[in-house]
Length: 166
Image 1 (tube, rainbow, N blue to C red):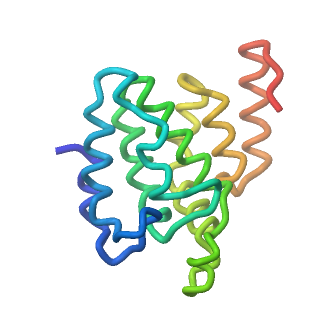
Image 2: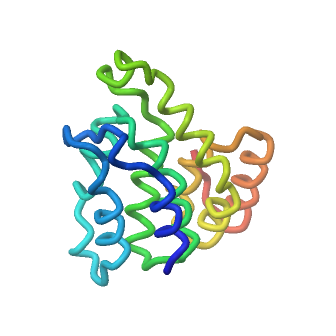
């Protein structure tokens, strides 16, 4: 058993609206499929898109997916899986509630995603230091409530790598 599976089992996905129009009950299987991918071709762009978010509009399942993604990143999956997880996480922390979700009483899904991502800061900072720095920094810019720490860390990475990041 993996930590992300335990975290996924903690959520009542069938009580959460998914972007595909169904409940989120199928999302643990989607994460399982993603985490078992062994080749880049198995990780498609649309794997989680349209379920958690669609063109940065978030659905009710999004905040519950954030800790699953963080737990999955802590498992240190293959680089192509990590890249997809970070990309999705970036959409979740930078998005906003889909109009249908706001009308249903969930206008703050992005804030919930940012708070949830903030609980995994050191997983994200580890990723920034040794993995996909740009994608991890994109998430951290929204997720780290301590912007002084974020800017200090980003500057340290720039000094180390000799690259300027926006």
